Length: 490
Image 1: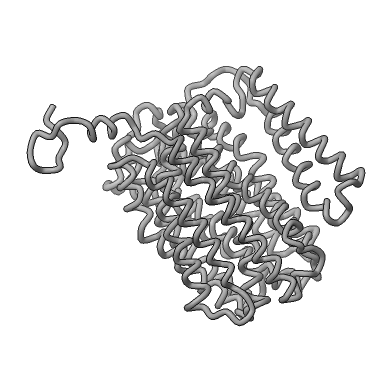
Image 2 (image 1 turned 30 degrees about the vertical axis):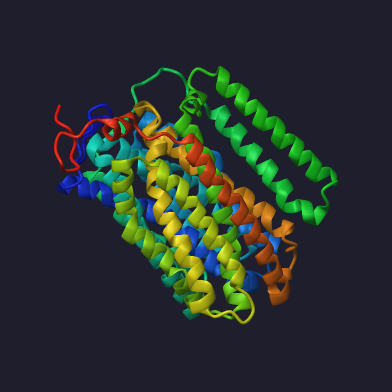
């Protein structure tokens, strides 16, 4: 059985068997959420046709999951810090697996949406735990490599997800995409119980900030409801205006509470670190643009270009292959030269990939139109993701490893949540317009234009705000003691 260790004395090293098993558990755990996120996009057209769903219903299938995930990620990180990161991680895996079964059995859109919300609860517990376990359990020298390997190996699941999911949708039913989570969940539970050490923060004695979790979750729900239902009910309707007002009030109440409570779910003091705050802004901007574009891209490929679900999944494969091949190297490079360069260039590459999606339309071919866009997009993500994640975790105090991981994931999900809610109506897509190729293609091009412009903002923000670690800056300015590019002697 795995032991309990204190986070200030991490014991795992990546080259050892114990380190590799712990890494495997976190990779497989996060892969459950990654597979679900990639597969659901491929399956949306089939779900819409089978359940006779409007675009707003498809939005809710995505946002119901993202809402509970985003609203409870901070709470999940706090639970892990207090009660044990391994324990909460495994509980999240169990909830996610059970909710996946409910998704696969759902007879209509309403019940599918509810089951997706339950999946989000499980995801909120397992997602911050996977990174927090790496941060708290591995020795500092091995953390960048472990996070890079986590990012790269997670790309395998992301790559296999659309392929397997597309095949299941095409050969059998979209319902089977939810059942592929079950064997992974079982493997994670067994490996975690045997090989992952338990870590937790020193006890504070203060009660959990349950009220803070309720405030942020309900605030996001109110705001998202207004954004999705505004085009349908009218922006001046009582329900929409009331939801916006309630969301704003609840968000303000959340901030006030976090400033006053003894043990907040989100310690606002972590934002005093300039690098952490800048990383949070870059994450929100880039992942918001990415989430909005990838919500519509599978529909564009299948309903406009006529791709089958399998072909749509295969067409996105270069993104995940590039992340698999380059993420670990990207993490190692950032550890040597600092993260600022990659976090400045990477978002610009992602924005370029999104801009190239303007070429994807009626009559487009894969080799000349789709492949260049997804290739550049994958190159940008491989450049950015590992340094971005490592910087977010290393910028926060060790006792807040779970919270830092949760914030990093939370702002990424919140960006995608708002993008999925706002972009379709902003691009002129509502009702059943997504089933008409001309309307969908026009809206898709408008949406990716907005996404590319928003994502491009993240590059200059990182360039002007991210600071490389002092040791790297000192090493660059120190005199060399020999002709080789080696560290100077002490």
